[in-house]
Image (cartoon, rainbow, N blue to C red; front, side):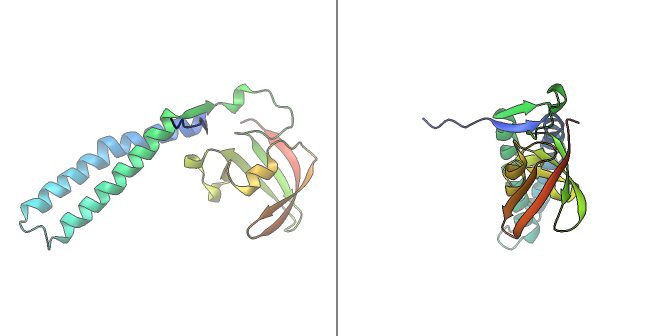
Length: 161
């Protein structure tokens, strides 16, 4: 028997995913069903673009609902604020690093896959950067290999916020 491993997720991520899931199930799903019913009423389905578009959208929404429900069912919710700060990078922590290559500071929060939002500094635990940071401490200098080249970071701050 195949058992799924627990998927780490932050407390904020759990709340956000539940809100998105609720919207998909109780707002978007009924709207799509309505669109399908209206398109069906137009007659011949073979050449009905609205019907096919609505059916395709329905499939995408159902897949997203299934992914979110599966993630929540297998989630290990971690509220990093309940874990004492030690200066060590762990899942859920917010890390300020000095990027030696680009001479600037960058802030990352290490989160689960479904809550990843790189443009806002939320990086998945499965990314090379997160893997390179986890377990390290404030003042550590680290080199992280990424597909786009090596990153040289100095960890300035680790917060549980």
